[in-house]
Picture 1 (spheres, each protein chain N blue to C red):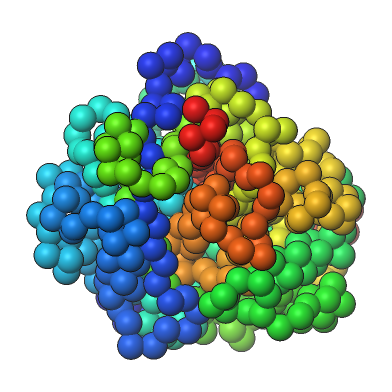
Picture 2: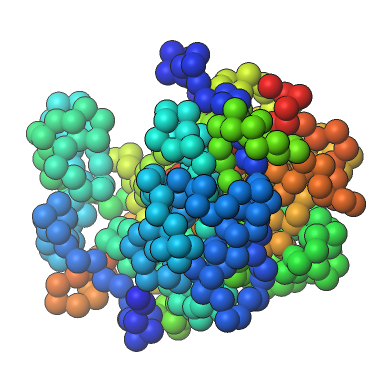
Length: 142
Length: 400
């Protein structure tokens, strides 16, 4: 059953065996992408094998942090009370320079200024001693 | 999209099973009924409609219920109904669950696992959960590491697909709003529908943002309600002497991704593959379909599905709706009951309401909503930001 008290707390990632290094990297200011040494596929979503070829030969490399907005949606009605005070906020589907896409949200700017193809750059946003979220800001370039 | 013809067996389930009973609980705001209670109301109706006794049900397939604490809803419901089936499962592929239950029931019956399957769902999202918790229960279905920390409601995943569709194809907010208006017009003729006040495009556009490009009235309802069906073999349907059995002619599914950021294309979905597989099995194409139930969790979803199901070319869904093609007199009357947008949306059972309407259209039971000459119907269910897609094609005896 859902505990009503939980609805007021923002959910934070609980790093697991697949994602421990990813979240540790963010704490150090690096967004770690998995590069496949067999087929050169690049993935954000951390897994033990390359999603394309199944190889276990994956290497972490820090992303450039540059990307653009593939799509976005400005949230006015938050998913539960935990996000209510942040509205309106822009959820971004960012396409990284290296290829893969990821979900994030805008920091340091007007959510209404977001547009398709807008250039964005990574901002490592510390939430607590353990978790730093990969968020993005507009760079003013298109 | 390439269709693997080899994977569709000649000895498919086409016409091997039929829906012989349908039931619907009260929908909308239904206080005082649990998810099980709503499902049971619908189940007893469906059993009676088929002219059966509950003891003759040997299979139960149910959708998971948010408001009910049971891990095995189908098993809990069997107990509630006082039956002991020999085939049972609780399915959970979000909004696509409805069509997957029919596909699975047909396969189970065709394969000999069961003879008479109760396909059922019920949930109490409006009065069984507070609105915030209803939303919360939906947001918890998003990834807890990669999506939820950014405050992304399920609505947001669908919103980003519609937004991209607007960018790529010039789909307009007015066209999205028109989808809501069409659904409302349909619901106004449906007894028991949750929303029956007249609605205009202007009212949709003025209803306040939820998550861009969606306004409040671009979004489906939150409701209580349940629906149930009896599926059995075609031979048994005949021996039962059911007046108008509705045959399951084809089924197809496709699961393209789990996370919205791994969706291959934001504007072309797995509905292409799921429907192509269903059409191939049924031996028909989109232009042959007389009436459709198209999952309408959001207005833009309908526009994208009209394209991906083959009712209009890619990118033209907005104009297709504007031209009146998805209602009476158009090329494919859809969601003639009013859909999730105006009839009711109680979570996973929501798409069962589309089945209820299409089955009744094919049985000629829709009164003033009746689509003349409806023989071939399609229902498409989807969920989780288009992660899950399932299509079922239904037909009257004339289509066999």
